[in-house]
Image (tube, rainbow, N blue to C red):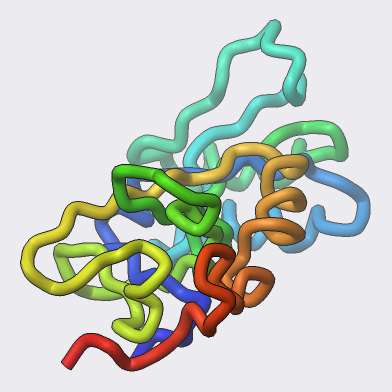
Length: 178
């Protein structure tokens, strides 16, 4: 049961893709929670840490089978301006597309919903803007990687911002697929 503005992303994909969060005074406790999730083996987890932020001078610290002590040491040293990569989680923004992209609603932003399936899923009522049906159409998902792109997608590309079809002047959400 996906909402009209959600796309179901397989949990395996959510665990492979990450989003970089700048650590701030306001979100440091949340970021430490993602590090704690590594120890507790709970999704979503931190995957990498850039101690120099986005400067790119230092190497990324990967959390691949780390010891509890290693993760706890990184939790203690976590500070503002570091960048923590976190698995995709519910509510993250992605772009959903079906080629050919002939009009602006061929690519729209949706919220991620992790699902326990092996395929990407969507609410069937949003097929119209993609000119899609259920006969094997190939859809693509693009995962946003910066805050600026995320804000722009939320402002301009979310389905809820494009509810009226640009070409036909009718609703883009309808039950046209049985």
